[in-house]
Image (cartoon, rainbow, N blue to C red):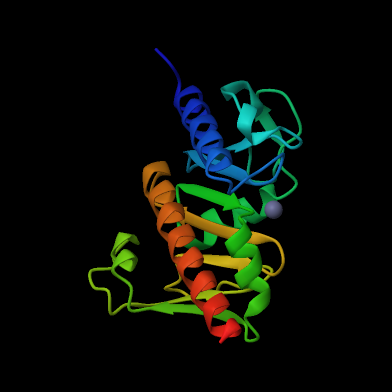
Length: 195
Ligand SMILES: [Zn+2]
C-alpha cells in the first residue's frame, strides 16, 4: 500500500504537469505542495530546477516545518518557507504557485496593494463563495496575509499567484477559477486601454 507521501507526490506531479500544459508554470517556474502530516508539520513539495512539463513523483520531497528534507532526494523549492507560512496561517492542506501571463500582468497593472474582482459567475468556484456578487480582494504582497483573512490567494508583483485549499483538489479548482478571472480582467482592461 502506498504511503500518504507517495500518493500526494503523484498527485502534485499531475497538478504540476497540468499547470505547465495550461501555460501557468512554464519551464522550471512555479511550485506545488501538500500537507502530509499536521503534527509534526510535514509538507510534500516540488524540488527546485525541475521542468514542470516533465514533473514526476520522484521530483517531490517531504520537508519538516523548518524546510529540511525528511523524505526523498533533491533540494526543496526556494519558496518552501512561503508554502509553510501559508499552511500555518491559513490552515491549508495544499498550496499552488503559478507564474501565468495574466497573474504577472495584473500584479503590475494594479496601482494599489490589491486586485479586486467582483460580479463574475466564476467566483462561485472559490471555496465558500455562493454568489457572483462576491467581492474577491487579492492582496499584492510579499508575505502579509493578516490584513486579508478572507482572500483565496495573493499576487506577488511581477511574479505570479499563490492560492491554497482544504485539499489538493480544492486548491487545483481555485487555480482554474482565478486564472480564468485573471484572463477576463486582463483582456477587459486591455480593451479599456485601447479605447
Ligand atoms: Zn515563484
